[in-house]
Length: 139
Image 1 (cartoon, rainbow, N blue to C red):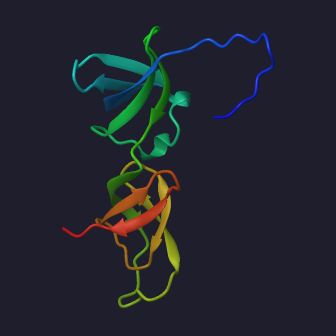
Image 2: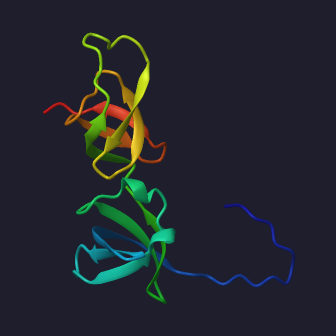
């Protein structure tokens, strides 16, 4: 980020580290994550997690940590997740040529739009940043 400061401003340098954690479970208003190397668990408030509707147990996330204070700053989900469709209206056979979308619920509970040929039980890839369907996963 570019910024211009006038003379006399003091800038504190903060050391941050990007660490991989595994999402374990939700406990009340907090999410519990485990460090992949040390197996240490940390609790993070739900409101610090963006796109929490796409998190599922066992998922690996990146947490930006303030190194001196050992406090979490940002929780980043992967760009894409592989998930299963748990509910959607039935599609019409052979209707794959149009770009028409229908609502679907994925296993995390989030609702996204998917093409008409996607059905319940299909595995799909979801773009977390955009919150939309990316592609179907072939078994």
